Length: 173
Image (cartoon, rainbow, N blue to C red; front, side, top):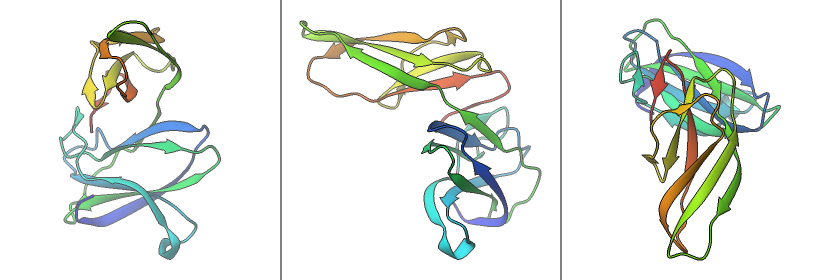
């Protein structure tokens, strides 16, 4: 993160094991930084991830935004601070991201495909698919649970992420 001052702390216990997005979208004009930690005392915290600017809309481009793999039953300490001591209202959003449950690669061609399937969330209004940090898809319907990535070269490795979308806010890292 950036130069975090004037901080506020929350505790959140993960109800699931899987990827979670925490951001400060809709925090007005407050330039926020985020830090996620585990541990039971301020002097004994272990940093998990931090973010200075997450580009959330609506809201300022300087909203904090992190995605990390939470572990069910683990309590996370969430630090939100104003960059260089800036203060204002804070909206803290915690979103459980859908899981990719199956990856199946096609075989037998020089250019292949991968079929992705995931379990979604009824609270989302749609999904985007990301491959190697780049958005692949147009907005998929909220009922979507699969996507086929094409044009892949056999023997290459790719990483995928399913990004939930709703009209309240969107964020990218």
